[in-house]
Amino acid sequence: MSVRLETGEELPFFVDTGTSSTFLDKSLEPKLGKPIDTATFQSWGHKKKVNVYAAPKLYLGGVPLKLSSRGILTDDCQHWGSLAGRPTMGMLGIDCLRHYCIQLDFAAGKIHFLDDEEADKQKWGKAFPIVPLTSHDPRPAVAENLFGEEGPHSLIDSGFLSDGWLMPEYFDQWTNTAVALVTGKAHFPNGLFAGEKYPLVSLPRIDVESDGIGLRFLARHLVTLDFPKNTVYLLRQSTGPLPDPRLAKMPALAPLLLTVPQEDLDAARKALANIEQSNATSLEKTVARKLVATLEKEPKPTPADVPPEVVQLPLGDARPQLAEVGWLQPAANRIPLCEQVESPLLDSGKVYATGLFAHSPSRYVYDLGGKWRSLRGEAGLHTAFQGDAWGVVFVIKADGKEVFRSPAIRGSEHPRYDINLTGVRKLQLLVENSGARNGCNWALWLDPTLFRESVKNQDLHQ
Image (cartoon, rainbow, N blue to C red; front, side, top):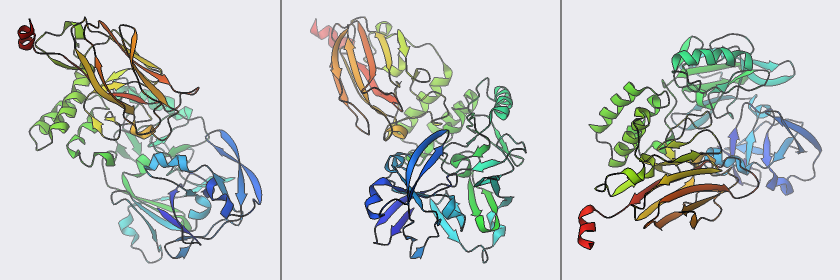
């Protein structure tokens, strides 16, 4: 949403019900005068000293927003923009939001500020009382959690990107439940909230003093936060998570994104059959086939053993001699199951059909047997982390000799490579850290493919 300064300057803002204070970006400090104080801001166990300024006049449309008399805080807000896919210059916290009735319409992509006295609340869905998280913490909470248990209140946190979180005592029980539901995986069980089941719920364990519900769960509903009346209304609008907006051009893949993370092979096969018979694009069908194949877990050939009549081989369809990554586990043609990114798609600005997950530092080694002529493809960072990655360098070695080295990649760049492999027996794809730190370096080898001449052409050369 956009908030306007008194000068008329429009600023993109987050709305975060899980943050107690309103923030402006540090770059705006010269317009705010002198700090009136400093404060220690704590977020997920990390403490940071920030400046406090007298609250400037902020407007939503032509209406001045009500801000705390204690002032606003400043921080580096622009790095938050990677989460929203656009620059960010501030955030409205609960010190401002508590004065309003706010409706979050995720399906329409809109935020409405409503008159709760005149509205027809029957259309808002099921009502839940809002209470302060604790006697010393005014942030909004409800007496429910995604494990289906009443107990410690759950913070309503629109700034938390996953479905929510559980404290350790409930997480251990949830893990046991998840084992029964998802064949030993504890990443995406069916959640339970107010007696309703929610598939594909991602709930990390966090050592804090409350449970929580986050943006991914809220986005399954029309959400109305009537703060003056201390009530939240939830009108459910989708069974599973809302489709990733980046899939707007690939809607046929949506059914697979519910079944593949659950490793439900039968359901994935049925979804694939429907996609094959539909008007889906060629790329959608190829991506769908590759995703389902990751569940089939059939043995893959080493490049050296592939029959000579095969003249093109994506490395995602080949068996490496060695595969190791710096975070999670190696994966081909998909993202491994994890809590940070729920989608299995190889997403780097667009969706790719084949590739390798290669969070730095990583290494994939292949036996070519001297039988391939070239390797072509791209590389890049996962879309979700392009704004936060500390940086990676992509390196290719042929029989131990370095034949390709990218510049440091920290954003949306996609280095391309076209490597001559004539006579090469061992191929290595490596990803190095470009600096001293390794955070968010979700590197991907994108459509890396081996090529060689056909048997017929080889005979003509002889």
